[in-house]
Structures are given as structure tokens and as C-alpha cells.
Length: 427
Image (cartoon, rainbow, N blue to C red; front, top):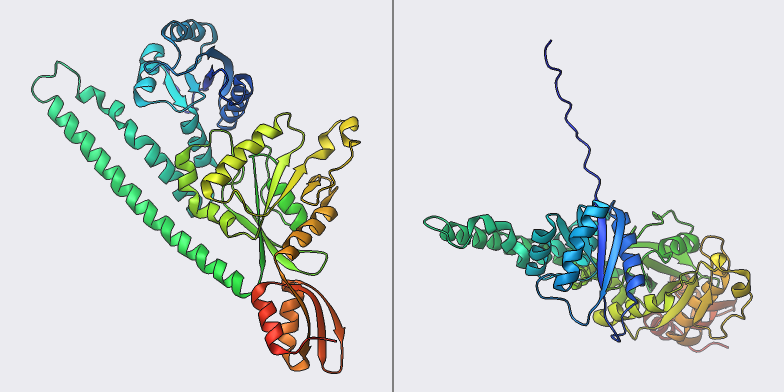
């Protein structure tokens, strides 16, 4: 009887992840349990199944295995017990640490940075997003190329071993550097296009607001609620990578542009911050930042500190800001009953139910008004287009007179100067 053909398994094997991290005493970092819980959420977002985790009290990572030698050896037993085939480390590994763990455990080893870059690569939907992720990935892997060529440069060598290995490695490095240069040039084109769009907004006196905050805090849901839009939303980390802008009309009639930006996270890799700088410059150009905080997260204070660290790295730490505590619908009744903050720069909302959104719109209008020029002038009837621009660019009231339209209120600098130049002070 002829042998039946074997079926080829085309499905990818399940990635069973084991997580490790250091419990560093007194360094002000997140507790290791909290950090590993977030690492587990990242691993699940990337499609892995988390089968275990371990930590070690240690002030500095071991230069060879990250964990100390004895604790690292225990991972061999953990692997036998849980059958993990992927080790994820909650910090960035040096190339030799990664090699040491791979040789010890005979499995794939990723650090936190590589995991986040992988998630970004999965979620990039536009050409710009793909370029930014590619740049971060190339810069991350460039110093780690050596381990790819160990089969060509073993000690003991002999003729034809060390030379070709070194030659191939240098060739690979040169190709990656050239690719980095090319991607950077393409991203510079994106930066110029954004600058052009920004100048056009400036000419039309449109106020700009950027949503910033920790990943999965609800920024995209809030943008949808404010603008009645349909921006992609998912209950996963880093669902949105590409900036999305929508027009929002405030109670005063002023029209603004609100932009949703990429979410931040604890220990966000520096290479990713640099790669996404073209996108994150929307934050620098904004007139106002809305920091969206997940009020239902028990460690929202730690998340705010991580957001502040990235904003400071970008040079936007001191920009005008409103703090929005989102997801208040998920709070317990006793917390919901707590008196609301009295400061106008803090608003409690639920983007999902709409609670607090009217207060947020009023708060945005108030803060933007503080950046405008007070005007009280009559615009001649012949300048009707100037009145229409003022109506949507600022916060003004109108009254019709024989001489023209009496505008009273606040306008952006450029259009305020134009109004004042067109007429004499109003009645």
C-alpha cells in the first residue's frame, strides 16, 4: 500500500512566553510586579501566550545573563516546567546578554524594546508609520548584528573563517546604515509636508490641540466623541500609531483641529521616540495639549510620570495643558461621588458615555482664549470675509451697527491685528 503523503503544517507554532525582570531597590521605578504585568499585556498584544514570570532583587543587571548566574540557571528548570519557547526581558538587553540567555535556554530571547517595536510594526497602517517603525528597527538591530554571524567567526578559525565573517558583517552594517540614511530622508520629506500643512493652518488661524497620554488611555475614543468621528479604536496597546486629525467646533463657534498622537508607555525605547519625532512634532506645534489619563487604572500616577518624561524629551513638557481623567464610568460608586477638582485645567470625563464632554469643550475654549488678543472693534460691511474668519477662529460676539459688524471678544494674534487694522474701536 503506497505511503500516504505527509501534511505540511502551515500554522505558526504557538509562542509561549516567560517574562523576567529586575526588582531594583529604591530607584523610583515601577514595582517589578506592575512592570511585568504591563509586559504581559504587551506580549499578549503581540500574540504570545504568557506561561510564567520571574523576578530577582538586584541593583544592576548581570553583564552576562541579566539575572545573576544562579537565578539564570533556574530558568532552565522553569523552561522544563512551563515549556516556554520565548523569553521576554523587561529591560533593554546588551547583545552579549541576549546571546548568553539564548545559549543557556536554547530559545528565542527578546527584550522590552524589541517587543514594542514588533507591536508597532504590526499596527503601522500608513507609509509614514511603516517608515518610522522601520527606522526604529534598523537602529535597534544595527549594534546587534554580531550574533547573526557567529557561524563565520568562531575562534580557532583556520583559513577562510575570520576574514569572510568580518567582511560579511561589515557589508551588512554598511547596507543597514545606507538604509537608515534613506529612511531618514523619506521621513524628512514627511516632516516638510507636515510643516507646510501647519503653515496653512496658521494662515487660516485654526487653533490646534494634541491628545497625548499613556497607551490605551482612551485618546482615540475621546477624539471620536469630540468630533463625532470614526477613528479606529481597540482595547489593545498601541492600537493607533499614525496621527489622526479631526475638526471640532467649540461652544463659542470656534473651530479647532484636534490630533490624536501615538500613545506613550513606561520605558518607551529611545529609538522609537526618535523615529516618531516627525509625528510627535504635532505635539510641539499644538497650541494646547490634552493629557488623557485612565482614571480607572490603579497606577495612573506612574503613567502620568512616564508621559511627562517623553514630553520633556520632546521639549514639550511646559506647553499649556488640560488633564482629562477618562473612563470615570468604570470607577466605583464611592469614587464617583468624590467632589470634582476645582481647577479649570482638570476635567473628569467618560469618552464612552459622553459624561463631562461639555465641561471639556468649555475648558478647551477657556484655555485657548487665554492665548488670544482681546478685541473690541467694528469691521466695515465690505470686510464680510474677515468677520466670517473671526467667527470661526476665535471667541467673539457680533452686533450689527450702521458702520459694520461690532466684534467683541478674543482672537488669535494674526487675525486680531487684521481686524484692528481694518477699523476703528467699536462703540
